[in-house]
Length: 233
Ligand SMILES: Nc1ncnc2c1ncn2[C@@H]1O[C@H](COP(=O)(O)OP(=O)(O)OP(=O)(O)O)[C@@H](O)[C@H]1O
Ligand SMILES: [Mg+2]
Image 1: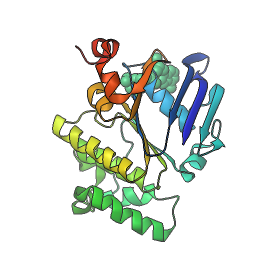
Image 2: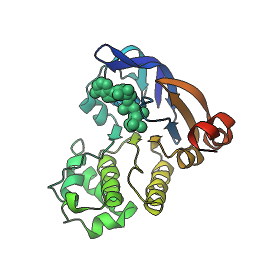
Image 3: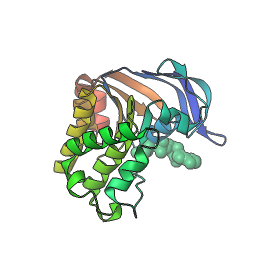
Image 4: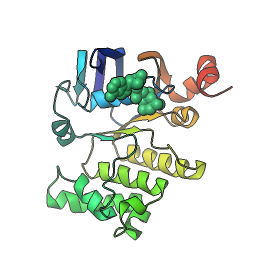
């Protein structure tokens, strides 16, 4: 579904990512964990076309993706839920969802809306509420719902649990598993390493812009280096 080979990227002359290689297969949740500033957001933004790689290759759904326009990648099913959610605050829940479906025709939009409301019933109950008055957890559900409206093949989530209580974090991450179970591949970035590793089919540990460890998610959670560096054990 998605392959990065030796991708190097950064901002202006500052190199942040150093020859990153990773892959996400259909039906998988793949987590990227790492400390603040490790380059997690830069990795997702590079895949999404928002940051241009200076070398390496990115392949999505069998096609070269590096250097392509973000909007074209969304059309092909590569959809990012950005850090901080980036909702349209003055628009209602339903309007935000409609905006997310800009790549789709009317029939697909109607079908996706029903699916999103089934996944997150709160969005249906509050469909006329203005997004900025939502709580943090509701906003995260709306941001994920809006991304689903574009019918992603690969959904990328940048720290969806930020600012959420443990209970809401659980609810959001449980929804992510259900999304995976519908056949969508998921690339999840989290600082909340224990949950992100426990739920991941596979995971990568990023340190200073390099992949330093990779493996099956639950197995990585048991790795002594991961436990001491990221799980506080
Ligand atoms: N627009 C930018 N211009 C210049 N440097 C940037 C920019 N965005 C990020 N950086 C730098 O790139 C490095 C990696 O940042 P990035 O946001 O990718 O890390 P992160 O792993 O997502 O961190 P966090 O957990 O805090 O979200 C940091 O040193 C950061 O200061
Ligand atoms: Mg980040």
